Length: 354
Image 1: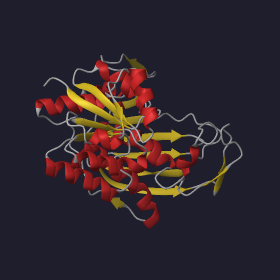
Image 2: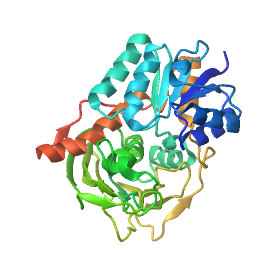
Image 3: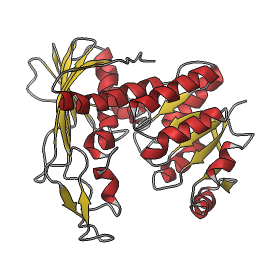
Image 4: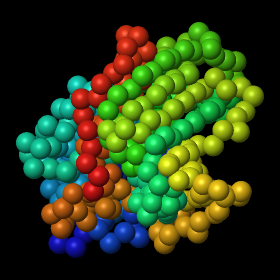
C-alpha cells in the first residue's frame, strides 16, 4: 500500500487548502469528504475532484478509509476524533486537539489501546521557515538557547469575521485561537515545557461586531482576551509569551525571538510555513538573513497528515503527533489555570521530539 485512503470530515473554509494540497503528497489519497451540510460537502467534492461526498457517519462507516482528517469546529474535535478511533481509523485533527484536557487524554488513550495513530495541527513547524530556524539552533549558531519571547498581538476578530461569536465564548480567546502555533513552535525550538506562570484579563464584558454580516450586534465576552505569562522549559530556558485580542493600536513586537549564549535568532510568524529567518551573533552590528532550506514555504497545510500517513506506512513515529498536540493543549490550559489559582502550574505531560 503506497497511499493511505483518506476521508475529510468538515468542509468549511479551512478544508479548501487541505483538499488543494493533499493530491501533491505521495502518502495520501482523498476518497471522500463529509459535512453535516451534505450540500457543502458535495460542493467541495466537485470543486476539488473528490470521488464522493457523504454524511459524517457514512464516512466513518466507509470500509476503505484508513485515515480521517478532522476539520470540524473546535467544540467537536474530541468527539469526532473518538468516533474515528472507535471506527478503527487513524485520525489527524485541526487545532486544538480537544477543548478539555480530560478528553485529550481520552483520545490518546483510545488510540494507544487500538494501535492507531493520532496527529494534530499545527503543522506549520514542518515548513521551511521554522525548519531553517531549527537547523540554526542545532548547528549552535547562537550558542545554548537560554530565553525566548513570543507575541501574538491583535485587536480581535469582530471587525472582519462574519461570525466572530465563537472567539469570545468558552473554548475561544487568543490563547486557544493562536496559542497552538506559538506554543508548538516554542516546544520545537526550546524543548518540552516544565512549568507555566500565567495571568489573564479581558478589556470588555461585551464587544460590538463591526463586520458587515452582523454589524451592530453585541457579543458577550465569556473568556479572557489577554493572556500572558512565563514558560520554564525542561532544558532550563525561560520564555515570555503574550496572546491578546486587546491590542487596539497595533504592535511592532516580533512574533518569536530566541536568545542564546552567543547571539539571537529571529523566527518567522509560526502561523506561516515560510517567512524571514535572521540571526545576530555576539559582536555583530547587523542582523544576518539566512536563505530558507529547501521545503514548503507556501501554505503547506497537509504536511502534518502526509508525514503521519508516511509514518504509518513505515511503522515509525510522526512529527505533528498527538503527544505534541496534547502537550500544547495542556500548556494553553496552564496559563488559565495558573492565573485562576494564583500559583505556578507544573506540567503533567512532556514531549519527545522525533
